[in-house]
Image (cartoon, rainbow over all chains, first blue to last red; front, side, top):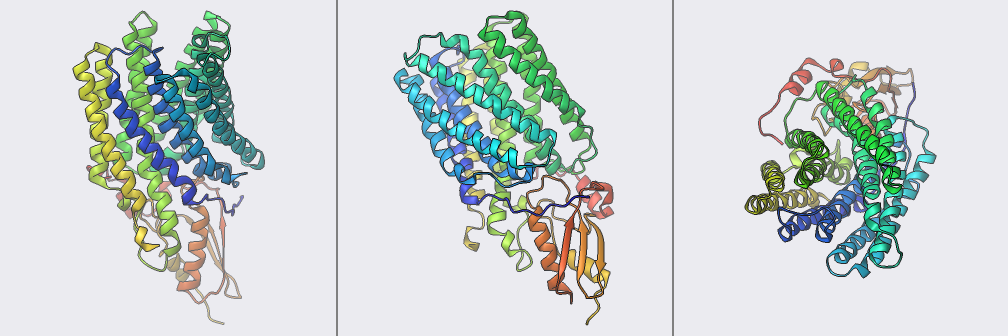
Length: 414
Length: 107
């Protein structure tokens, strides 16, 4: 038997901005979809600008905030340099804005934006590696955190090289680096991190126990193999390696999907709250994305790829993140404002801090919007596209309201 | 010196509620063992529903405070253990029944 008793909860003031700023970036990125249409090209500057606005401003911002909270409890040791998190989010926000301006207004801003983002992520990675070295507890989640951080560094360095090329400072073809950059950042960092965090958060909130974690171990190894192969294959024009990597990534995602099924099957808590409903939609869109990618790889038009990409980043990633905002934010607020009052006065349960009707409305409008835009990209219909974006915007307003309400809950008790 | 019984200790710990699920630690089956020492000090061996629980340190503190507040004991030591790992079969029937309800539209 082993015991633990260490203090490693980062302060609320340090983490809260990540969730509030990330949600604002989500709203802005949804609104920005009105500047696109149903026939985007993946290499267009406007498409790339939107992807960076969404992935850096929303996805990375929220993941970094969640990691600030979860890294210590997973590794079972305090952050090596928790104060770093005070400067990471402002740098990430400024860098994102500069990069989006660089893609849409003048490419000369890209190296500056890229540099600020690079520094913010190097600081994040430095804290994580340093914290990992302090920790003694080993698990598949700890391994995933370390590996995904290496991919983050590879991805951001490749992105910075591309930013220098777009800004005219070095003479390489940035499009040749695109696939390596996308796979490193999105596959190697975002998806791998989501896989790892799934192994902590889904059993924790669903009270799942006794499930086999072998599928996750396979998914982890295959994802490393797949992402590395695509990166090397694309940089050195080795098509067979690229195809091998894409295949390995597919098997990794399938194995991860099976792991989620095993966790869901052993779930003791059967309540279907907004968290569960959002997760069901998230994993449904992951399946759709994989199916559409297969169609594209076997001769489908680019519309299949765009729709697959949309369902992956707006459906799977977006819903996985928003679903957990309804769990993580109440916990952070409760921990800050009510934990000291336990035993002294009546304190609320976490679910009471969620504005239920607005949360459900967010889920419904956002799911409708993601579905409509996904179909619109496939059939290339602008009316459907803007209808979907409108639904997404309503969902984003509900999300902003919900996040703000949860953040404000119990402020009077302080 | 006043005598504290194990029943009193369990009753004291049952005032500690897990804010995520809304059940107390005793009915959740998280308390593995309670010992009352000759000097009146209390020793509690417990687990948490998940190893990555961010509340684990608060839980220790709440259990210690509850025992000191609700019983005549003036000291309570809490040890968190991970073996055997908790599962829902360790919880009371009322908890199992409540957890198994799907709920409709609730968030």
